[in-house]
Length: 397
Image (cartoon, rainbow, N blue to C red):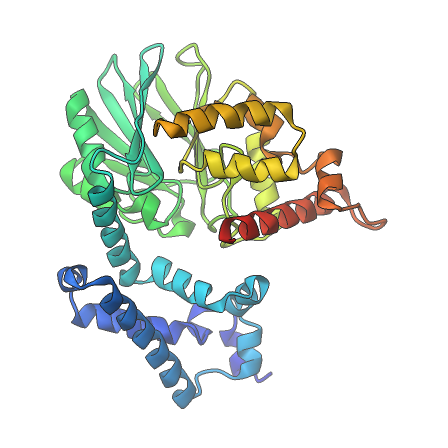
């Protein structure tokens, strides 16, 4: 490989996939967002396809990189790992271009039309004067409004759609102090800037590695964030789903109750997020962070995935009695479109297969054995990788 290509391969701008994105951004600049929002779906998709094809044509004509450089690029390795290159092109467009935000706005519009009152019915949980309100947004996301009722201070976690979050704040009559954002994906961060504009003193927290929209206060692993005397959060750096994903733990000691974990797309009820920007070893380390927390901790995930996750867990562990009991409860809840949050980490450790990569029963169910020269952590990461692969197949079938 020539030196010029060796230097380029470590940069996103050296990847061939960058040039189709340039063309898409160029189209988005020429065709403004309101115009695109008004177009029918097939027109927008045609624009995306034309942009990508045009970008690759430009790339080929200009010979921006050789095949050897492409094979060694980070994006190519991700594509090879999943064998779905078109997905990774779409993912790059979604996370790195204006087109991603436009797509998010369209999803908000569709969700509001389909579920005018939200996809699920929720009830607040009150723990010694701290009120946690799940706010259903989009088709299956949850934002969370956390209120200290004694001081009327509030923070919000992952406000993808600012409209229902603002409605909740106004109904409660509280002042928004901050946004706690778990990661950059628009279905978790799409409302950051709008809320910051609406509430001038509002701070936006997140990890700088993730390019969080509207970020004002970058966080590192185990940083603490305090609001008044009772809202004490600790951020944990948990990469894997994205490179800068963080989770937020509300300390229960200050309020004399259980702690609450806002897990974004790291952990769900009986599930975990996809490994878009990390490998199994990275994700395992992040899941171990969750596993180290107190069993009484309440889990508040970023999506309503409980039913699908438990049905998958039933295929992996058909004889798990605790999982079967939870599944029957979830089916009853979802039959009435009721929220399934929160669970507890004690529960999750009994039926969430992604928190059981140490389990011999799970190893046997997956048909895996530790190799003679394989250390325990590497073996557990291989178990997680196989489990996630099967979950992806289960979800796509």
